[in-house]
Image 1 (cartoon, rainbow, N blue to C red):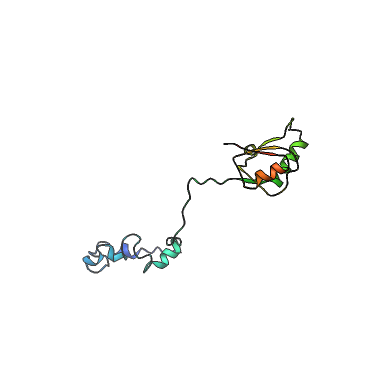
Image 2: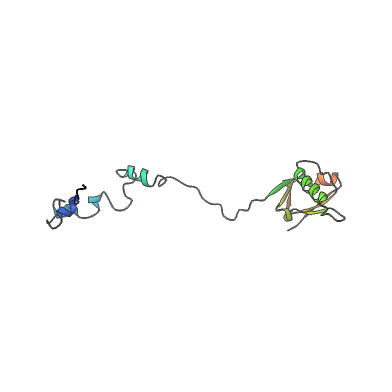
Amino acid sequence: MVVKKSKKILKKRGHRTAGYGGQKKHRGGGSRGGRGNSGLHKHKFIKMLKNDPDHFGKTGFKRHFVRKMRAINIEELNNIVEKMLEEKKVKGELKINLAEFGYDKLLGKGIPKYKMIVEAKAFSKNVFKKLEEYGCKAVTVE
């Protein structure tokens, strides 16, 4: 059978200081080791480690308004063109807008297999020369 045991503080209620010694001793933040988060790096350190381990230390920052450019190499562009030719989506001149495929910039790795006009927001330095060597054009679009 479970014995109901009343809390010590309930027993002490009604007896002036309820077990806290003098009335002045139970007053203010000093009786509880400071108010709020005070002492988390000192006498309440274990409590902090248990309940809020990431309380101290830097957590970095967010770089707002920085948009990453999604880039694609000429090698990968060749693969896209091959798929387009297989599916017969190309009529006449090969004109590719990288924005339609979710890319912003063309990089210079690889050799273009097909003569094409490539439209993009940005190109790397070597791409213009490389495309012209193989009979292609690079057009910058906003």
